[in-house]
Length: 165
Image 1: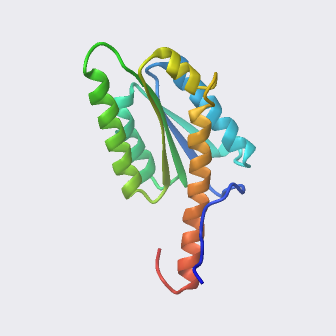
Image 2 (image 1 turned 120 degrees about the vertical axis):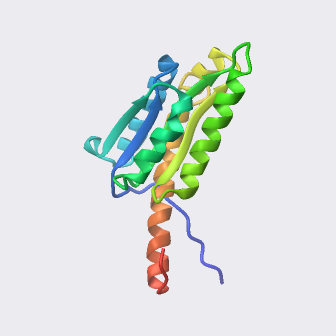
């Protein structure tokens, strides 16, 4: 019979970082509020949450890498908002951000989650920051909690099996 191992939403042990782009701050600050609220509601102490701000979404992967490599955090939540304009700028920024954060997540010991909005309009971004379509910052935080707990279970399972994580 197979063993099923998955994360849960029990209070996680350890510190969390939120890496957020300041550009489109009227959106990203709502994402931060949602993320912090979700972490606290799931048992993370305010003092165990650090928020790092960078200028824009393009800079987010580098900040996330530095924070994840510090090994000071069990979870790193990335938040930003890229809104399509009349130039190809959106495609470059959104693509590089997603690729960069994906790279960090692949290589990090910490759980890294992606809460960067890529929207066609300001209205879509507002909706995804808590108005109509939930708060994607909250969703990224919930995913991070689940992944932190999954990483811990994986380490425990491997140790019980006499293997290294």
